[in-house]
Every structure is written in structure tokens, then in C-alpha cells.
Amino acid sequence: MVEAILFISILLLPCLFLSIIYYTFRMWLMRREYQKHPYQEESTYQKWQKHRRFAAFALPITFILCFVSSLIQHDIDQNELEAKLLVKAESYTGENKSFYDSKFSELKGSMGESKARKKAIELTDKNIEYKYRIDGFNDEKRAFFNEKFNEYKNSMDEFSAKEKAINDTDEEFDKRDKELQKKYDDQKQYEEWIAWQQSEKEKAEKAELQKKYDDQAKYEEWIAWKKSEEEKANAEKNKKRAGLNRLEENGQIQYINLGNDTYNIIITAPAKLDYSGNNFTDLINYATQDKHERNILSSAKQCMELVQIVQDAELNVNNYTINLTGDVVDGKGYKYIDNVVICEISGSAKFVRGDPYSFYNKCSRYWTIKGL
Image (cartoon, rainbow, N blue to C red; front, top):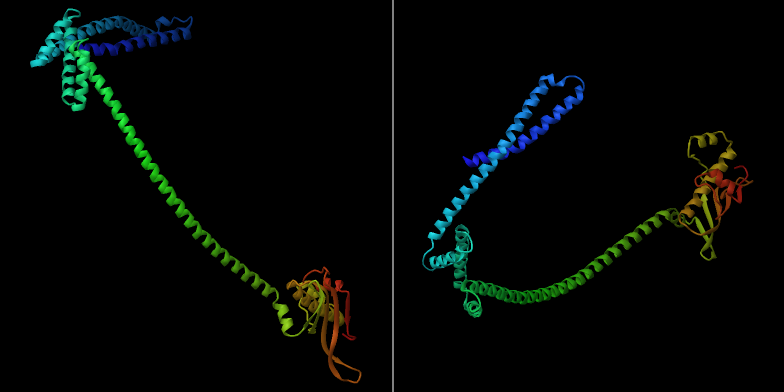
């Protein structure tokens, strides 16, 4: 019941205090809003005023209830604690009972009975704990403890000597354990370092071996790539020389070596005298020309194509001579094959590729047989 009253009063105190602040603020706002208007007659203002008065009345009463109930609850708690301490004290037997009684009698004169009982119980529990600790010592720890205990018991009471001897024993053997652990850790670190060294050596050997394999693989890849590039270059070269090879196979080309890998080229081929323009405009221009102009344009186109074949082969040419042959009839009516067109053009002449008009204009000599 007391606990419930204390709990409720603790909850009510901040609620009542905040409600006073809240209603005071709301009433101040209304006074400010109404100013000269008689705000006291407003029902809302009167209701807030009643609530604030109730909170102001209930606040001190609640505070008093909280204070009184806390005092009562404190006495109840103390009585319960005292009862528990009595039960705890009565549970001791044998040596523990004697130790408790002696400590209680010793402390009772210097502090209250309740505090003396509590302190005596704490010391008795520690004494029991120390007894279990001592019983758990091995021979080495027990010998060290006995040495320290005999050293201290001449200058202090038995309990304090036992407590100090146990603390010294714990510190000493903790120190020894740390030193031993450090030795184990150092040995472990050394073994780990040796294992790391061995691992690094194996990694280096594997890396070296892998590098050899990788270098060999890269070399083989490079050889394959070089072979592929050479094959591509040869294929491209053969493609560019395809037309030149046909001229050489047909015996239509003659090389005059001028030294320094430079040549004069003489090409002899049957005249075709046909023309197919690059676009519709070229065909219209060709159709509107007379026979002689057509033959000039057709032969120039053929000569240009022969020169472009040699240019595609990327030879260093000083001068081209193109002889186009055809059927020729002399004054007596005999028919034989002879040159009908002779074309000469410098190897450095810059004509528009595929344009026979540009080629014709760049020729240094362009001879046609009479009547062509």
C-alpha cells in the first residue's frame, strides 16, 4: 500500500507542476488577446483558473504524501533488511558462527547494531571465501601463502593477515603466469616467424617458377602474334602486288634499275579503248564527245589503271612509259600489231586517283597513232 502511494505521488508531482505552468500560460495569452475586454467573465478563462487552483492545492499535499510515504517505505526496507541479516547470521555454524560472533561483538561498540551486523556478515562471507581459496591452492601456492601469512600475523589480526597473504599470493602467481605466458608467446611468435619465412620462401620459388611459365607463355604468344602479323603483312603485300604479278606473268612490264631501289617502268599492253565512268555525269560527258576524244579518254583510263597497279605495289618509280598496242594497217594494206598509244608520266606526278582527265593532264607525253 505504501509503495503504491509513493509511486502515484511521484507520478503526480511533475504532472501537477506542469499543469500549473500550462494553465498560467494559457490565461496569460487570453489576457493579452482580450486586453481591455473583461476576460474574467469568459467561461474558458474561469475553467482554466479552477484547474490551476486545484493543481496548486494538490501539489503540496502530493509532496507531503510523497515525503511521508518515502520515510515509511525506508523504515519498512530497513526492517526487512534487518530480518534478512538476522536470518543470514543464524545460518552460520561452527567456525563461521564463532568468527561472526567475535566480529559482531567487536564492531557493535563502534557502530550501531544494524551496521555492525551487516559488516560482520560481510567479513564472515569473505572469511568463508578465503577458506575455499586457500583449500584450492596447489602445494607451491600454499607454501608461498603460509610464508606470507606467518610474516603478517605478527603485525596484524589473523583475518587481515590472511587477506593480505592471499592478495600477495594472487599477485605473485599472476606475475609468474604472465612471465610464463610471455615465454610461450615469444616461442610461438618465433615459430610463427620461422613458418612465415618458410612460406615466403615457398611463395618466392612459386612466383619465380610461375614467372618462367608466364615469360614462356608470353614469348610463345609474341611469336604467334609476330607470325600472324607477318602473315597479314604478306597477305596485304600479295594483295597489293596481285595486279603487278599478273603483268609480270604476262611479260607486260619491264624494269630499268636506276640504282638506289629506283626504277623506270615500261608497260606494254593491248589497247582496250572502252570506258565506263565513275558516275552518270562521266557517262554523259563520254557520250557527247567525238570518236577521237572518246579514244583519248578510254586509253588514258587504261594507262592510269596500269600506273595505279604499280603504285599499289609501292615501288619507287622515276618514270612510267605505257605502250598500248593494236592492229595497224600500212599503206600497202598489210596488217600488223604496233603501238597505237604511247604515254609517259613522272613517278612523282600527283593526279587524282581514278580520274582519267586528271591523269591525262599530268602526262609529260601522250602520243596516239594517226586516225585514232
